[in-house]
Length: 418
Image: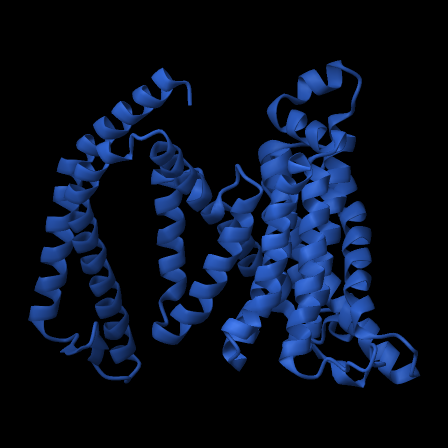
């Protein structure tokens, strides 16, 4: 009985979180944010089928998200025009099948090779589709995009999915089963073969399998789930435009996957939640939020290549092994230095951003960390430069102690056999 209960526990907890989240965060803004999180979780996990499972770095994965969304929104409009008895919960499947169809079509070309060649082909396909969105106006709607009205579709057991709460639960149900399906895919022999292609495609071919066919099937699965995410986005926002399939959306899903952690299944989930939250909250605070995302990506790649989940797992492993106390003195030393350096960097970015805003006649006065400052005066710049320089120098001086502390922790864990 215990062996059966243990694997079910995370899924029951995940389902409980999805069900209870609107009760804890009932506001309209929270519902919209959580709906977007559910969509991005599916999108990020679909990308991880390529990158994390098969080792394919794609720069155009938003193509299948966007095309799935466009086909789904056209399907919704066709249902409304012809008064067909199709309800909203079926529409994401339409987006998924569209993503699958385009995934097979483009995958036949792009999966012939791996590595840099695959990445460049995916980038080329992404730019081709993105530029075509301004030419094929009948399908893509030009700059305005295509709109719909989800409440005009046939009700589903009395639900018209007009209120955002009903849309959230629709997304939550699809999110749960898509995550479950993608996890099950990783546990199949095909999922293991994807890992083998990622590690050593020559050996896979030696034992009788075609690495190209494995890549094509994985690519098709990833496009299918990305199309489902696009269909859910079409339902939630009732509009699709060219931005949904451009380079910005592709870079966003790449950022989510790396920030969360490519090496684990839960990494893209955590990354999607973090980036979606920051994207919505930071955009209300500063117009330079995309710059912060770029700096965050660089920091994770340099100092925590396994992402948030991998970084957390390392510390939990040290905590379970009783070696975490060795890290505390080093962290106590470097913590204030990191805080000062980060604070100075944020001040420099915001002061520079305000100076550029002043050039657009928006004024040099601003509110920074609860204080009124003038970006055209010298004191804020001196403070920012001092904090950044002092914090950065201290970080470089203290960082070897952090490395020594982790060396002692790893030696202790290795000795214990953890």
